[in-house]
Length: 475
Image (cartoon, rainbow, N blue to C red):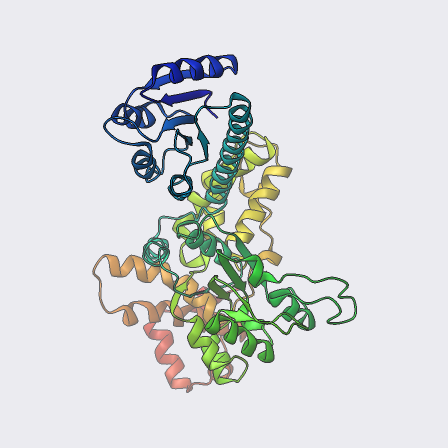
């Protein structure tokens, strides 16, 4: 705390005695002779400690105390002094936020103990404030959702709208898309940001233990319950509870979860008394919950309770323009975490990343880049440093593969204002198919037509239209 004290009293002898006392204790002293001057110095000089007389010209100590305590930025411990030690004044001073109260004539030994307590109290408050600030900074550094694509912009807008309220949120997206990160982003920008963020993964906890994980248990509730234990709901009091992979939750437990969300109370396993909580619920899933409801695997009433606001996270393959930005973010983070020299992507490596299908989404990208940074001595990473093996690629169906290949062509064509996509694309689809079949049948049109499942005359017509000759299908 600041070793500065304000002494506010219209009595000169009291000011002189207190100045000497505080200077001997190593304090810088400032003085005021009336209420208005005292209030001004409290705001301008921000002393760590103040001794104020109740009865002063202009404005009395109790009124000053009431006004300055409204200032959130002021952290001054104020001790009220008075010659009239009445019960009413004492109670009123403490109600208005005084640290303590002392009567005149002042006992310096009593004051000495009081000042030491005030200093200790302020030091603890400053330490707590510092820890909270560090926690906020840490949370902010951990809740960076990187991207500038249109889908990401929409996510940011939604987070901005819903974060200030306590509305329940359902986050949908494939594994590795950053569902927990978005949940933390909502929490960090909410009025609950100073409260805890507690996450529980329904898929990672055995079903028989999940109820205890959520709601806690009493001692002796089951074999191995040797002591009372709080669950995630209690630990999240005043903050946010993040229910990850909620679609994997057992139906019986879903009913208890629904009640806990609706009533804001629950019972510990083996408990007889309800426990009330104040938490915000954010749930996430990589499943189609509507389909799960239709198949009776997920409760419809719980789905509607969770699905107040839905945020859909796009897979990385749907926002590939964010990949270079994500790569730079991860390189900087690896540099900070591991103290290694910052890496960059070569043009060829960037193209390699952009062409990958990323079944593991952002988590897979992070792992690929981390491996490259750790194993490659190159500051400019090349494609061979990325170790994007076939095993890392998602096994695509024929339809998915064709769709992936067609998507950039369609984007490019439509951006130029061209029409008749069907007529433009179909020859490119038919020609390689017919060429491959003719190659397999050594240009035997009867066998080729049979394999294709079309009439021989239709095949001959297609060969002519698509200008396919024998030399096009030579081995």
